[in-house]
Length: 79
Image (tube, rainbow, N blue to C red; front, side):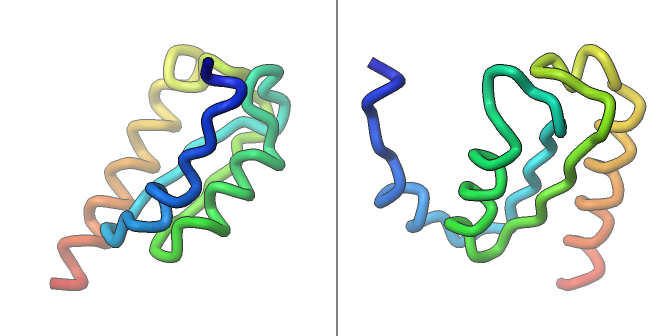
């Protein structure tokens, strides 16, 4: 059951850079959950979109694509 599974131990093992795109008003995954994930992943970047819901990639594909491009460019600049 997804509501009772705690993957915090496994998530902490992720050492790769991680981009978290989230919406301020997501009714399924709250911004507090996104912030908690960001705080757990030591090498993560969290970007919260003001006017987006749970379907952020569908509702704001251009914004998501731009954020991903910026993130990947930043990775290539750091070796």
